[in-house]
Length: 385
Image 1 (cartoon, one colour):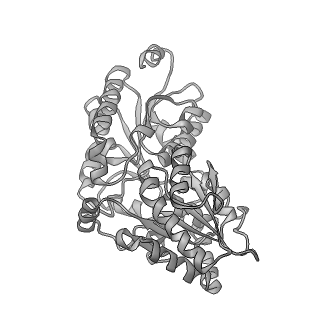
Image 2: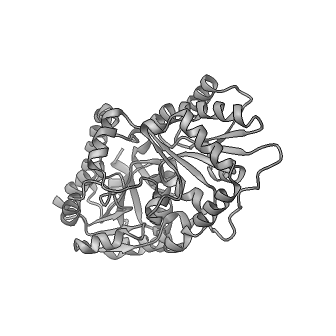
């Protein structure tokens, strides 16, 4: 698998390894790869990612879809796969000796990769910070030891790293590279036939099997109170559509739910309100001005540990940036079908509240640093070589 890359090492000026272990990281890695190629067209890019990075010319040595998990106990179930991937990555570091290692989020895996790179004197750029400001803040000591530069995407992260004397640049949020909020389609007004409610269970298989049944049960309750309500489910590129369709068939009638595969923007532009898994998608929805009910569930053990480790009041990115609850958060036991349905019904019944939320959401863009994050990271990357 590594042979073609090894053979290229004598003729390619820059050899850059990029590690993106999840669907969102794959998307950002693809944009970054594109930006690097614009500046250094003959650079050899390889590493861990998904279809988006592959399409932009990154040679994959591990497919990120095999690694994407969430929650402490959920990670344990995939340890064998993760260890095999780690062995491949470490072998590539030793054999190819890239000029730069770029890590994108995915901290528990990427810290091990960074340590291996450090032993080989390979410079490390970390793009999209782990949420160490939320929990396990002592990891900043590890980052200071292993990482040459942090490229962060949330406005409150740069002061945190400066406080700990870690080289850092706030590059802006990469979502703005593909969203122009001023011209983005706004969610349509509630049609006379009733509201359209988008259901976004996440980009991991475990999220779909855990959260989508809860969302669909909530949809059934909402339907009783709002018979004209319609529902559309987002199926991420990283999710097997047949798996998602099976969950929909099990928990909802075939004519009650529409499925949109691929771009979640189609769901944004059809929906007056979303029920979505906590994650980057809630910030993306905010840039389109779509109010969202944030939901999340993990295993009981993961939740128990998280409650004792997490140091912030909110988990939603929008709420963290705003430093207050703009969007309702329903976590663990609160993410029940009944509570989700009641929250949605209350919001739909209060148009003034929805409008106020939309105004707050559309102001988010002013806090995110402007478009061009990928270009700024590419410039930092090439400066480190």
